[in-house]
Image 1 (tube, rainbow, N blue to C red):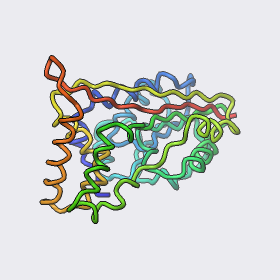
Image 2 (image 1 turned 180 degrees about the vertical axis):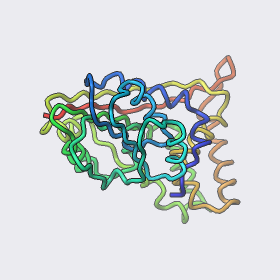
Image 3 (image 1 turned 60 degrees about the horizontal axis):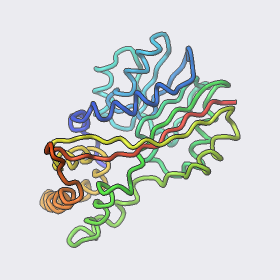
Image 4 (image 1 turned 90 degrees about the vertical axis):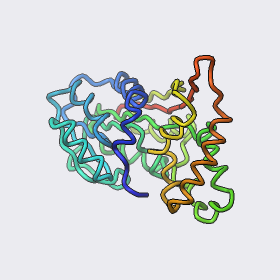
Amino acid sequence: MSDWNPALYARFADERARPIADLLARVPLDAPKTIVDLGCGAGASTAPLVERWPSADVLGLDTSPAMLEKARAAVPAARFALADVAVWTPDAPVDLLFSNATLHWIPDHATLLPRLMGHLAPGGALAVQIPDNLDEPSHALMREVAKLAPFAERLADAAGARAELLGFEALHDALAPSATRVEIWRTAYVHPLAGPEKIVEMVSSTGLKPFLDPLDEDLRAAFLATYGERIAAAYPRTASGHVLFRFPRLFFVAVKR
């Protein structure tokens, strides 16, 4: 995919901040010395880590140069590096691996999660939040429109950009062998937005990218028009004029044995 757009992503900072706070609240560590923010983006998840543990060495990793540039300016107390979480290995065991809305872009969680647990020091924690919204209209409609002419040929692989998430039992089985404690939960956030066009705008910076990036300017505009019409039908306005954007997210925290 093309590089991420920090400005577009930041337009919905409040909606994206809620799961970060909810995940951080469940981290059962008092004073981790080393923290790595896996997929730090522009630093929205890194800043609260620095705020909670100001004495820790906090490192943010991301594959986006544009996002890292923003992160360095926004969170000068942390370090940042260009790295792919799928293959990254720390120099020494880490006390906290924190990942907000990143691992759904990395395949094979049954292999990935035990590998990440292996990067932790004893008593350390892996804390993860992953969007779990592929069955929501917002994302089902992406796949539906991608099958239409004239998009189908160019978007044959778009739906496979995101990883298949493990079910609760398989997720527990991937984490439990090296953990003393595994906590798993799922939360559906309901965001009141000004209109269906705001849903399109919000997902354009994330889930819609694999569907838009392969298209030229004309096809991209046509895709967005068709998708926008279907989003408007799927998300009716409330009496106040807002639309309610449902956004389920999967969370888990595992403590290393």
